[in-house]
Length: 508
View (cartoon, rainbow, N blue to C red):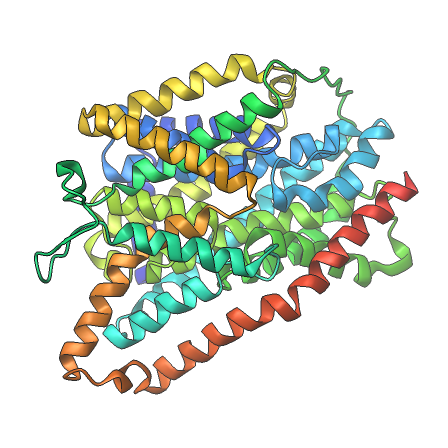
C-alpha cells in the first residue's frame, strides 16, 4: 500500500502540464535520436543534458525529460534495424534478424508496429518490476556500511564491461583513467592540491557534465564529420499497415517472456539491454523450434528482442536509483545528471527525494503509453529522419551542446575543456576504448575514495574491515566473477550473436 501511495504521488508530479509536455517532447526527441544509426540512448541523453540546463528545469522535470529521451531512444533504435538492416544501437542488433526480412517482404509497416507494441509491453513489464523491486532493494541497501559500499563500487567497475563487451581489459583501463581524472582538484580531507598544475579552474575538480557532453556528443559529431557528413539515405517507403488482432495475440506470449527476461538482464550488473535482447531472441527461438520461421521474417523474432531490450532499460534503473550504481551506459549518464543537480542517488533518495524518484517512475509509465501512441501513426515522420543528411543535423546538435554548457557556468574555459574531451573521446573511440567506464570512474571515484577513508578510520587502519562481513565477502566474490566471466562466457556469446547474424545474411 505504501508503494501504491508513493506511485500516486509520483503521478501527481508527472501529470502536471509542464512535466507531461516534457515527457512527450522527450519521447519524440528520443525516438528521432534512436532512429539515427550509431547514436543510441547514451549519446542521445548526453546530447540533451545541456538542453535541460538551458531551460532551467527543476530536478524532477529535468529527470522526466531525460528518462523519456532514454525510453524513446530504445524505441527508435528499431527503425533503422528494420528498414536499413543497420542497428540504431547494439541492443537493436537482434531486431535486424527478422525485422529486415519482413521489410523486404513488403511488411515494413507490420514489423514497425509489432516492434512498437513489443517495446511498450517490455517497457511496461520493466517499469512494474522497477516499482516492485526498487523499494525492497533500497531498504536492504540501508544496511550497507563504508566497507560494503567500497566493495559495491569495486563490483560496479568489475562488471562494467559486461559479458557482451568486446575487450574487458580496455574497460579496466578506461575505468582507471576515469578514477584518475576524478582525483583532480583539492582533496577535501587534507586540503592538498592534486594535479591542478596551478590552474585556478581545476581547484574544484573537473565537471563530469563537461566530460559527458564532450566524450559522447562532441566525439560523435567528429565521427559524423569523418564518416557520414553530407551523406543522406534514400527515403524508405513504408506501406499501409495491415496488422490484425490475430497477429497481435500471436506475439503476446513471446513479448511477455521477452520483457521478463530483459528486466532480469537489466538488473544484473554489467549485463544490460544487449544481453536482454539476445537472450529473449535465442530462448524464444529454441522454445518455438520448428514452429517459428526465425530469420525469415517471423513477427515473434521482432517482438522478442524489442521486449527484451526495453525491459532491460527499465531494469537498469534499479541499481542506479537504489544503490547509486548505474546498470548501463545510459543510466551512468543519468546518474551524472542527478549528481549535478545535487541529488545523491542511493537508498536515502527514496525518502529524501521521493518526489523525484516516483515522478520519474510514473513518467516512465506515461512515456511508454505516449511512445506507443506516437510510434504507430507517426512512423512516417521518424522514417524521414533517416534520409536527412548529417550535415544539417550537426549544427543543431553542436549549438545545443555549446549553449547548454555555457549556460551552466558562463565560462569559456569550460567550452575549451568540453572540446578537449571531445577530441580525446574521438581518439579513444578510434582506439576502440569504451567511454562509459571513464564517466563511471569520474562519478564513483570520489565516493569510492570517501568510503575507503571512512572504513580505514573506523578500523584504525585495518584493511581487514573491507571483507569483514558476509555481505562484503559476497560483494567481493561477485566482483571477482564479474572480472572472470567476460573472459569465459563473453567470447561464446559474441560468437553466437555473430553466427546468428551471418545465418540470417546467408538465408537472405
